[in-house]
Length: 310
Image 1 (cartoon, rainbow, N blue to C red):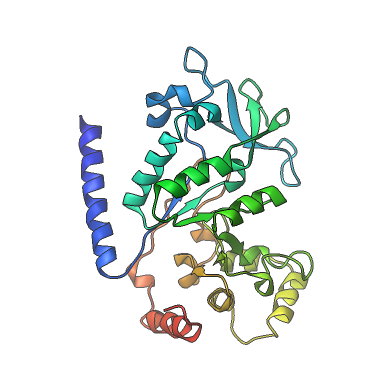
Image 2 (cartoon, rainbow, N blue to C red):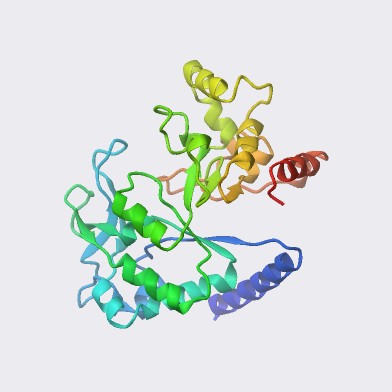
């Protein structure tokens, strides 16, 4: 009963917050993971939609295959969907999920968008992701159903990492903007898709996301040749980090620019939001009003007006 009451209070307060934000022209941007936890209410209520045995144990789990960053890949442990059963009932579960999320938020970022085209299926008994396999997903049918169910789809596709032509085609077919991360822009050559001159209107640009270091923390960890490349790209400006990347984000042709609060406040690595793969100590950061400089709002306003992001 206490948990139910706490949830009631939370959603009541959230509704008040959302109404207040809308009244002032502020939109809330939510985040939707593609998969849900094994011990979640969704799995408990709808076992028929997940790859579970008769005892409720997962038979296959989600993750990503081995790559440059991990020899064993990533085994997330979320039970996979029974996409055939979801498709049989017109993706009712997904429609309900997005309807609920769109009551709470005005825009949604879909995590691991590539999993809607094909996902990495790992036998649940495997301790790593090595022995998984790619399995096609009915992403086209799903988004067609969602497009029919909702007047608009205010979604952003998290399309980071190795993205195939098929994944990109699915995103573009449903006019979903992808993501451009400026911290990823300065590796490789001039064809790097994250460099500002390669941005496109159907994207959202970030200096960095919650999974990245702060921009100042990221920059401090670069070697001198990497810093020189950034300086050469921007024409050796007098503006210092992180404001150099903040300005670059606002100047991008991407339809939306997102700047983490840590970057606005010029904070370093000690104020990082999240370290992927680390279970403890994340998502605890909070800003303090004394960190907000008196001229900060006018500086942001000047950039917003200069680059037409009003």
